[in-house]
Image (cartoon, rainbow, N blue to C red; front, side, top):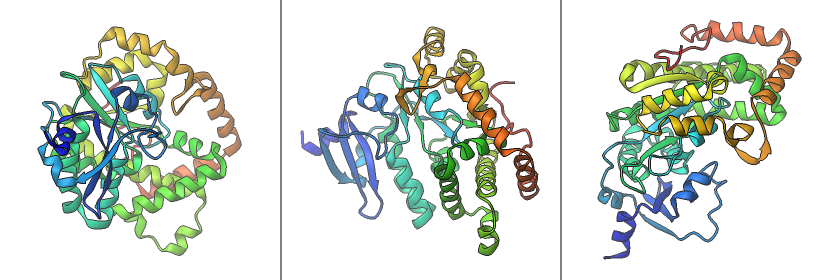
Length: 340
């Protein structure tokens, strides 16, 4: 068997990065634990000592598509998506891939080269990302939120795939931006420039008008732009393929919400797993950095402190933003709802 054939037939060779200009995929040889243990599979993943090989994208056509396509968790950022994805990982049942670089590369390819090019790549890369390590194990992919421009494309390419839309309401999103200080505000403006490339009408505003907006006004626009994408996905997928969950509801009732997510995505984790995870260490540490203590109580105190600091400014920004996006639900609730 040739080296290329071994790469194509072995799930330990992970489709790590995609170079759209070169038409090549960087495959990284790793163990299942290496993928499951990494908070993020982007530049923050430590690949030290791992064997890598670049192959033509076209060679991925030799990968046999898994019987069940990957499930997806799409999110608006700052709504506990990383924690949720970590909770859903169970060897032999479901492998959670958090923010793989490959998905980001395809999303950017769509913005630069158009949907026909990105869809061709997506059709080859999804089977590579979705292949299990063992038996009937499922794969769940949680892309970063700047990949939300691919939701409808994934639905078309994988017509039986299921999609969970995880959000926070607008006040919670703005609080998350504000409490991160200058870094959070800069991040909001960066997100706006990225989403502006996806054709949202609000991005056609006069640049001078945009420059006069505050950072939190821009952040509000970012939230609405993401919600617009989710509303389109919910309409396209219907109740059979799409469900919405609020991040705060997940934190408030983790065992119940995990059971519902498990049932909807058909992962087969079981009640013993969801109960163990809900009462375990994942809810007592930072999902992005396990060395830092964190939990619902600390999160609530942090949120209230930021709310107190924002004062009436928050309500004014919300009212202004909803005047531009009247289709966004005022209470932040989307349909079909997984809970409530």
